Amino acid sequence: MGDPGVGKTSLLLTYQQGGFPYQFLPISFDTVTNNIQINNSLVELSLWNTNGLDDYDRLRPLSYPDTNLFLVVFSVVSPSSFQSVTSKWIPELQNHSPSTPYLLVGSKTDLREDTKYIETQGVTPIQFDQGQLLAQEIKAIQYLEVSAVKNEGVKVLFEEAISWGLYGRPMKRTHKSKGGCILL
Image 1 (cartoon, rainbow, N blue to C red):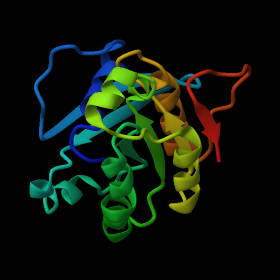
Image 2: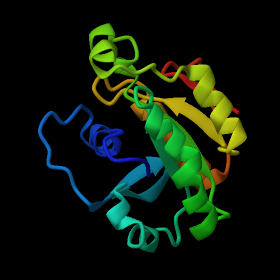
Image 3: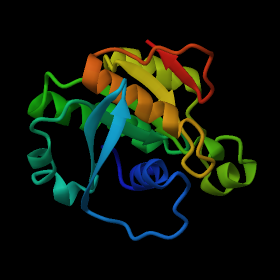
């Protein structure tokens, strides 16, 4: 969940297809179900892509029952989407699904250092420590950053989400992983 344009659809399609989808149509609701192998067990993973437009505020919560974990997504190059985390998305979760945990995800990290983009958009990018601080403030179970375009952090994000959703804990890693992942 998150504001329109933060990269939710790109993130889900990059995970599903293994690379950035350079051509896709924006969607309102979409569900993708995959069977994946986790610790020698076959697990059904359902990913729901919901529209962040205000027009869907009454419809979107209908997809929340039985959710194991939410991804609250903002773009690191969109201060307004960062503010929406506390003004819209967390209140919506607290109202409709207060006991379901959530991860905070900073997307579009590839644009954070793109000076041309930053100058033309006239924005000050959200830095990692700001995202981490917000995650602590909103009691997110973890903060991660991703770039769907570069496919950076995407696999780690979904591994962590699956682990939290199934086991209520982060992935056990035998080596230091890349991808801007920090456990809170």
